[in-house]
Image (tube, rainbow, N blue to C red; front, top):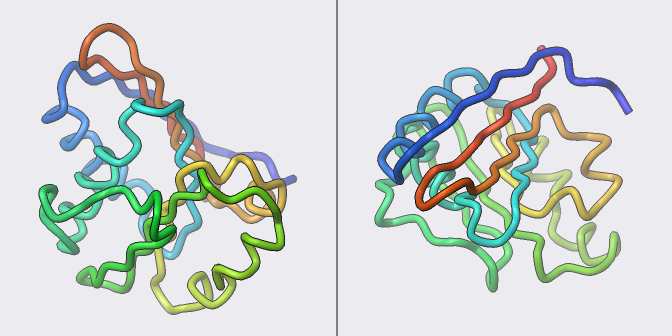
Length: 149
């Protein structure tokens, strides 16, 4: 696996802070990218995606929900498509292959934001970046972003 070459850490104390940090991360990790979003249930991954999509002009935060049951939500951003995936319910590489990730990633300017992607070695191999989130106290979150230039 290719190593990540860049890293940045953030800390937020509120949902509003997470949304604001998401806008900064959206600038750092511009498309095309395959991004793994790591963190336990309730860590704030979907909240981060809400802010990211808002920064890209794809959706307002209240329009964004987790694709836990649908697996993929697709958004039209100013400069391409954003795919928000939640792989929590998938158990095999075969199920993953059926989603059509290759087609999504091949689209010009596509950005794939993938929750629970670390479950699949094939995704870890192709990821351009990772964002890890960890809850601290209350609404505080620690965020760690790693990427390749």
